[in-house]
Amino acid sequence: MRAFAYERPTDLDEAVALLAEHGPRARVLAGGTDLIIRLRDGSIRAEVVVDLKRIAELDGSIRDDGGRLSIGARTVMTAIGADPRIGRDFQALAEAAAVVGSTQIRNRATLAGNVCNASPAADTVPALLIHGADVVAVGPAGRRRIPSDEFFVRSGVTVLGPDELVCAIELPRPTIREGSVHVRRTRRRGHDLASVTLACVVGADGVTRLAYGSLGPRPLLVTDEDGLLADPAASDAAKMQRLAALFVGASPSARSMRAGPEYRLAMLHVLGLRAVREAIARLALRSGSR
Ligand SMILES: Cc1cc2nc3c(=O)[nH]c(=O)nc-3n(C[C@H](O)[C@H](O)[C@H](O)COP(=O)(O)OP(=O)(O)OC[C@H]3O[C@@H](n4cnc5c(N)ncnc54)[C@H](O)[C@@H]3O)c2cc1C
Image (cartoon, rainbow, N blue to C red; front, side):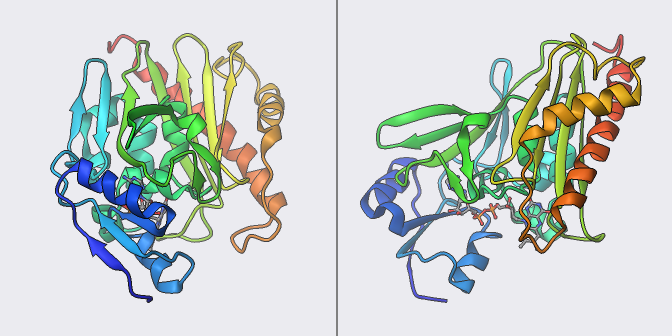
């Protein structure tokens, strides 16, 4: 590993000042489960690494903020998978967090790190997209809130400036009954990145949102507004046809070592239909529970 300076600021202003001073030559360190590997293999070079772990404003808590859940930049996957509020209102996110890597990885890996790493296969991102999450960034000009669907550009690239860091991810509490689910396809059991990762939410208003990753340069969000997918009486054939129209933006790479493009596309449709079924079933279970 090439040498780099290591900084451990204790407040946000100091962290932002370091990023502003060093620009793209600085890298933020959260859990380090992606960053350390990439510093070691040389695919990322940094002059300075800014560790967030001592910043008091960035604790690992999950706060209820007037209709929104705010997940701090140091919150790890284990905490997200175990939080009862997330399990109840954002089940797809709880499920996605619970399948990231292994127990050891989940105890260190943060949600913000998963988002900022911007892997097209990031497991939590489809769930954040369907649940309408915002990414809260802080930089020299102050804070800004970025809708998750506008945050990702392509693999490894987001709209975050080199002098900005993510301080929280916010989720609006649902105002209607919803059923949501996360599903994925991997090459093998155990820890592996997904060949297809997908989340789906069906609302009591008949709107279905699906988001999927690992099938192009960034995860994509699609919406079925007219109630066909949410209709338990509609045929599988009609739903498959609708899913095919919704998934038209999928563009799996032919160069990936994980699975061929034809297989990924086929699995996207299969998982999409399964996810819709499961989300409808979960929505039905919640009838009368709110
Ligand atoms: C064995 C193994 C298995 C894995 N399995 C999975 C899996 O199943 N699914 C999956 O999605 N991922 C998986 N990962 C990837 C990784 O664990 C996740 O992406 C994790 O959430 C990254 O979080 P972190 O806190 O470790 O981020 P870091 O490694 O600390 O950072 C990742 C990137 O984000 C930037 N960053 C981090 N926090 C911030 C912030 N607050 N503001 C701005 N930039 C920031 C860093 O500079 C870096 O570029 C796996 C990794 C390993 C090593």
